[in-house]
Length: 406
Image 1 (cartoon, rainbow, N blue to C red):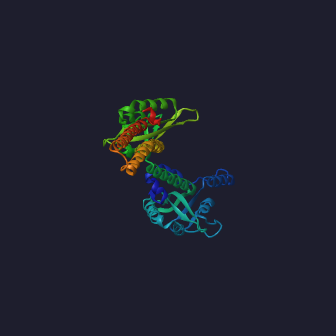
Image 2 (cartoon, rainbow, N blue to C red):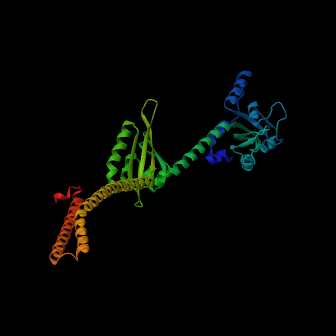
Image 3 (cartoon, helix red, strand yellow):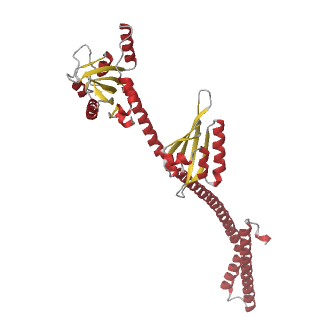
């Protein structure tokens, strides 16, 4: 039966499964050794979590083994339910299809098989499979139903758990862009391709299985620079039953390039021989793009930091140079003031003498003193020229020497 039908109480006439229905629904032969045979039958039903039952269609009376009524949660020593009461125990979502299947089996008459959920008197729900066949009269009309009921609650719960895990794994794979494939060693071909792997290659999973019968054939979509490395890695690790990890790029049918990160893992038998090989392939294109962007941003930050460091060093150098020049300027002003004081004192002294004694001096004396003043002024001018030239040289060469060295 289909998985969805098995879990949600759908039913199917056993005409589609005659071998199983006929074998399970055949009447149980009387025990060969009386009580010992009955005990073994009860033990077998208890171990197998199944019981047999018989329903009279005319009166609706229902009889069965203790294990059958235990599955239903009914005390076999008390009042037994009839067929309609039993059907009322079925989950409302399952009841209509089960009733229809039984009606079709009676009308056939034909073997049948149903599965569904029943409610016990204690309020618990159990999943059951019921297989049976009609008993007929001389004219072929159904007079009773005989069947076997099995408690498959734990099995169905396990199936649901596996389904939930597979769904969660599928969702996780979709979110992580993680697909996988399975290669069967005995069949020497790919036997499974996940939906996500199909999306990565832009192909239907069935097409992937048909096109890439061997894992090494994925190399045809790998870009040229990575193709030989991919083929050699997969071929060698499969031959040696080893794990592998590899990153490569592919070109899809639409022309898009994708970065893939693949991990392969062998599945070995108890004897250590390779049985299957499973590999996961993750589309890391976007992650690679962000990684490259981050690497480029980090490079730019480092370049800017280096430029800032150089600017700080240059600023420190120029600050030190300005401080040195300020020291030189102070020294220069001190030297100029010292060297100008004497000639200016001479000019001022003779000028004051001329002003005070001009009336008493003769023309010759006045001209003589005026010449002294002029000579002093010329000397001061030459001194200023020399000082300025010296200052320029000192600033250029970065040091101060005595102006007498000029």
